[in-house]
Every structure is written in structure tokens, then in C-alpha cells.
Amino acid sequence: QVQLVESGGGLVQAGGSLRLSCAASGRTLSSYGMGWFRQAPGKEREFVTAISRLGGRTYYADSVKGRFTISRDNAKNMVYVQMNSLKPEDTAVYYCAAEQSYGGGGRLVSDYDYWGQGTQVTVSS
Image 1 (cartoon, one colour):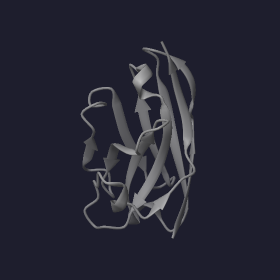
Image 2 (cartoon, rainbow, N blue to C red; image 1 turned 90 degrees about the horizontal axis):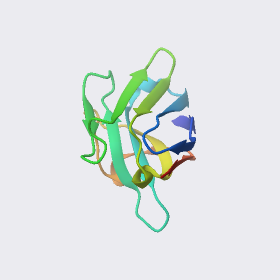
Image 3 (spheres, rainbow, N blue to C red; image 1 turned 60 degrees about the horizontal axis):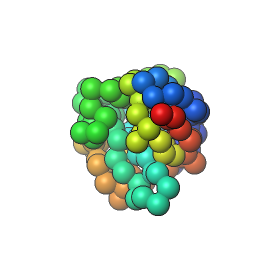
Image 4 (cartoon, one colour; image 1 turned 180 degrees about the vertical axis):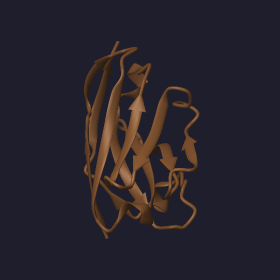
């Protein structure tokens, strides 16, 4: 089992940047594929980005491709997402998640086994 805690959210103007962090405790992070999801008010939770267990493969939603970059540091049990050129439509609660499947890169909420509590990102126009 793994526990996940997100941080780094906040209020930023459109065009700005934020870096979200996800700290993992419990089982070693390299046992899991990792992902980030987001949920805006009144909308379903949606896939943002994912990374394989050793970081060799990354996956992005079309809406963030070219603007967001996911990375991980298994030695530090940390996962990050660098978010650049932020838009008002990026406003949401962002969640870090871990999946136990071997391949990683899941895009569905149901692919993931463990979730953090979320961190709010607000982008003003």
C-alpha cells in the first residue's frame, strides 16, 4: 500500500506556471505507475498525464500536451508535473494516483488503486 500527498497548487495568472509534487510513503514508488488527474466543479475526474514505473514512458491528454511535463524521482519517492502556459480551463483540483498494473500509463480512473487528497489549481484570466 502507498499513501500519496499532493502539494504545489495555488492561484496563478493565465500564461503562468506551477509545479505540482506528489510525495509517496509506504511501499516503494517504483512499484507503481503514476498518474495525475484533475476534476473541475461539476465535471468528472479526467486524465491529465501518466508515467511508467521507471519513468521511461510518459503519456499526456491532448489538452495538456506540450504544456505539461510529468517526471518522477523514485529515490525520493516523488512525482512531479510541471505545468506551463496555464489556461483558465486548467482550473481544477489535481490528484496524484498510483496504479499497480505492470505497464502503467492508465488513462481511466478505474486503472488506479491509490489516490491523494488533491491540490487546488486556479488559473485566472
